[in-house]
Image 1: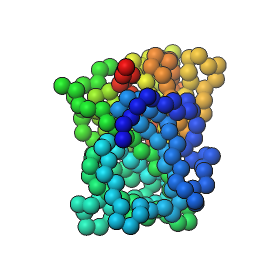
Image 2 (image 1 turned 60 degrees about the horizontal axis):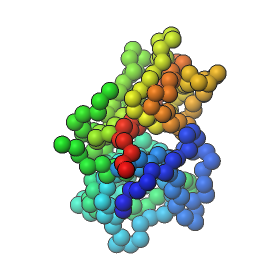
Image 3 (image 1 turned 135 degrees about the vertical axis):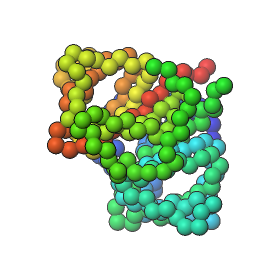
Length: 121
Length: 121
C-alpha cells in the first residue's frame, strides 16, 4: 500500500488501557505516521490469518508483541515462531508470513512499525 | 544529530531478556535504522537528566515506557508526567524536556522512535 498524507496519532496515551475488545475483530490504532513511516498498535484476540493466506507486504515491518502470545510463520521456515511479550521481529518487504494463532484467552497487543523509506544515496 | 547510514539491528530478539544491568549507565540498543528513522531500546535504572539539563532534539521522538516507571518533564509544563508501563508520548522536535527520575528499584525499559523524515510535498 501507499503511505500518503501523514495522519496524526494521539500525542500521549497508554498502549494497554483502554484496551478495545478484539474478540470480534482485530483493532488497529494509528500512533505515528510520516512519509515512509507508520506506527500502529494492533490488538488481537484469537485471530489468525485465513488458511493458506500469506502476507506479502511492500513495506518492511518491525513488530514487537507486548502482551498475549502468538504463532508467526514465515513461508521460508518450516515451523512457526512462538512470540511472547517482548519478542520482536523484523519482517523484510515481500517476505511472506502469516499469523497462525493468537492467544484465545487474552488480548494480544502488538506494536508494528511499517517503514517504506527508500535508502538515500 | 544527523542520521547517517542505516545500521542494522538484530532481526529478532526480546526487549526484556537479556536485560543489561543499567545501574551504572543507561544502555542504548539500536533496533531499526533507516534514513530519517531510528528505533532503539533504552534501559535505565535510576538515572535522571542532570540538574537544569534539557533535551532539545532536532528530531521528533515517539517514546513508550514498557517496564519500570519514570517522571518526564516538559519545559512548557509545570509538573512532570508520571509514566508507567504502556504510557507513550510524542515529543516534537525542539520541545524541551528532561527525565526527572527513573525507578530506583527496577529497570525502566523504553522504546524510542526518532523520526526526522521531512514531510514530502
